[in-house]
Length: 461
Ligand SMILES: Nc1ncnc2c1ncn2[C@@H]1O[C@H](COP(=O)(O)OP(=O)(O)O)[C@@H](O)[C@H]1O
Ligand SMILES: O=P(O)(O)O[C@H]1O[C@H](CO)[C@@H](O[C@H]2O[C@H](CO)[C@@H](O)[C@H](O)[C@H]2O)[C@H](O)[C@H]1O
Picture 1: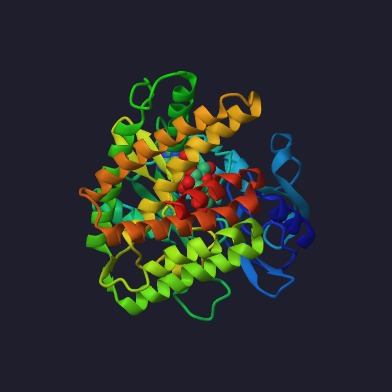
Picture 2: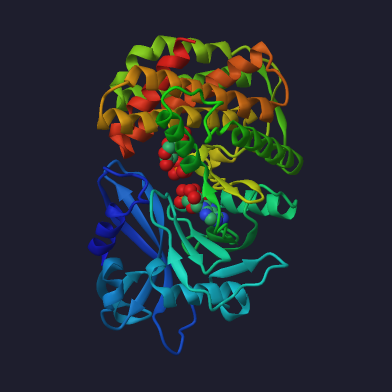
């Protein structure tokens, strides 16, 4: 069983530590769902893996146990083994098994159906259609999301950590505050860590939220706008039909509103000069670690360090709960306006760090980087296809980026930035671009030139 689990985890899109050697060192059962009259047995297992270097990670595996093979689920088979609860079984990744997912939805609809270790919670006021058919999302995801019909979406966290999950926590607070800019939280699933001696050591496993079925992904919309611009030979970004600046402005307003609510509902603080010096140190440390992974960054070490050093002496910088990993792919445009998703913070950071108060400028910087990415990602496609007119496209791409960055920044700041604010924003942007270099090398090496070009621009500003 361990070798099947190891193979499955190693090849999963959501496996956070790709390329590292590990063994399965523990499997603990978080809980089972009540056995139905028909359909598979369902359990949630927590699999501990330990790396050659000695550190470990914990992954959630929702499993469906069937007495024989099911052809429709061939792509989701993890292995065949003897299970203590279900006997000899064909074991499948449950997110692909409609009957298994339907059992999970039924438990959300009526938490009293599952009196075992798995605790299903619902926020008041929502109805669930338990006959809704599940469809798993595909694509680049850190977790696994499954839509139920047209109404709800279940996100099961894959790499889990004891304690409150920031995505559940922030969605709950924003939903209860009536924010228009998130998909409403409907419920969540948690378990008392079966391995913990401490009662109350909870692990949050998933969240059920409103499914924004007709929404368009902000990253796709921005790229479509850039494609339109490139298709019009002689027009400026402001003149083409697909101009995005109005959307960027509305996105800035949405972020400002979300930040306001987060500042009301979570603790706020002010960073002292010593804490700012610590921030500058941590940015330099992240750069040094990144140079080990991305040697191309070394030539910008001095330029980037100079930017980080500037924030060391700042006084009284306001910090609060923020999104932590904001980019266009975390935004959805609905008929009623922009929604922001995925409040888990940067997946590579330890959980304890991700929930600490930070400056709003970190989120703003993330989005500014994303405008740069959109223009350069589309330019890559053109450059690969014909190689002509690259200079002109580069110029116009930068024009698009500047126009949308300014529209977004104006709207979310609501005023001109002071010189110090601009320096702080530059430092956060540089820090994000350093993070992106490592992210790209690990996940999409051919995209590395995008954050590297961003860094070149930031240090030469
Ligand atoms: N409530 C929702 N309704 C519709 N689509 C959503 C919703 N929340 C997220 N998505 C889509 O699912 C994708 C993955 O969601 P995200 O929360 O970023 O998951 P992950 O943590 O796995 O990266 C997003 O890019 C977005 O397009
Ligand atoms: O969405 P995640 O929480 O998994 O975020 C990670 O993956 C993102 C890519 O999917 C990555 O974002 C980078 O690429 C985006 C385009 O694909 C771009 O819009 C972002 O600006 C850029 O940072 C993100 O950094 C990473 O944490």
